[in-house]
Length: 126
Image 1 (tube, helix red, strand yellow):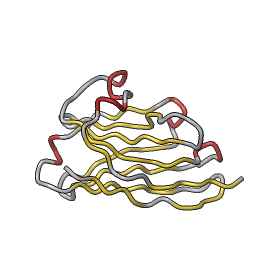
Image 2 (cartoon, one colour):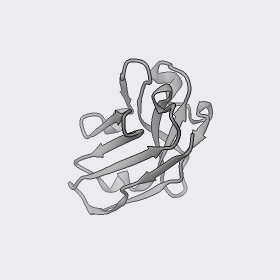
Image 3 (cartoon, helix red, strand yellow):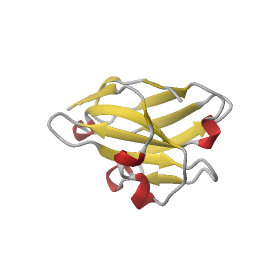
Image 4 (cartoon, helix red, strand yellow):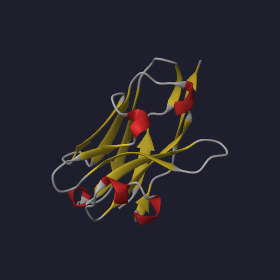
């Protein structure tokens, strides 16, 4: 599967953005999807994930209550709605796909994902 992320941009603190990740192919529903981010000079970190089987969602603590991950299997797309953005949310956000299910502690590990999209830059000004 090929992934294409979009929706990044420049926003003021407190604002919102919605990221999209469009997938090619006809097996999108077979993939657990994840969003990761990497700020300049920092390691890539897990943001949110949504399972392929039951649609369970998983979030890193620093985005709980602010970000929402969702998927539309008919459109082969996963979304990340980001509200109440903070300057520390500034990063390149990437989507990833994994043809498996797993608990949050497993899904947080970027090395298990088979497919990655290019990143989209999110910049939050103070």
